Length: 371
Image (tube, rainbow, N blue to C red; front, side, top):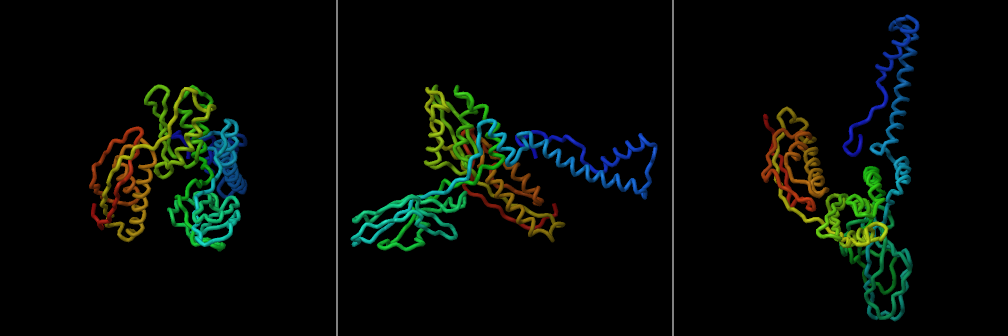
């Protein structure tokens, strides 16, 4: 499917039946022969038409890969290189681990690099060797997840509390910050969007697209960026993270550092990173399934529930997206709901630098219905 809401491109006729018809027309035009159904020559043409169809599909895929709206994987990387825009690599999640030590300790305690901590099936490890001096009873050390990507994100303060390889004098350990910073390799769609914005980055005159480009280049976890200038020489860059999460202080600092470089902004601009304003809303939905679908109602219930959750994520994943529950109704009907009642205001306007986020959300299956 094409990106950027562009229409799909079709270069070649790929249907085997149409290719066969074109071949038979050509044979008839050149030889005057009309091949009958049992004619071995017709069977050969039919087999050849199927082969041509396969090759044309491959060729069309290759032709589409020359367009940014379709390019994938390594081909997209080549397009990015031409625009001086590299794909953002995967990153490891990080946290700060606190060691609580015995008070009667008489020796300095070395903490080797790679000292591991476990939470579930996930491990974090210290980055550098450290020595905790005698008399210090509380010591903080940076640690990094041993697995790359988002898998290490989101562990709450105190949730990591198991020291894998015991150390003397250590009474307990725990993380003092929420684990964050881990990211999977930038997806094709997000990377293609940055390549599309890349020409904006060539100017340092302060175009809106340049600020959006450089903000998104800070992290692949940034889902949406809006730029606003409240006063001359001042630029507020609003950022929204993946799945509609608000940025934390570290996310904002990373964007500000990237945007404040003298290579990416006018010298006269003061740039501030900030989170969007949250517009809270509540949604309570009741739905029915048609009687004729009773035998598959369990499957439809799961589909509708998933569509409801997907809608909530979609709603909070972009700034300035008005709350319009007609979108929700359409999604639920597509998944099999026959009748839907939304017990909430049907429309809530959301400002350009605001994001709508559900304060409470509930969906209830009410049974079967004739309509």
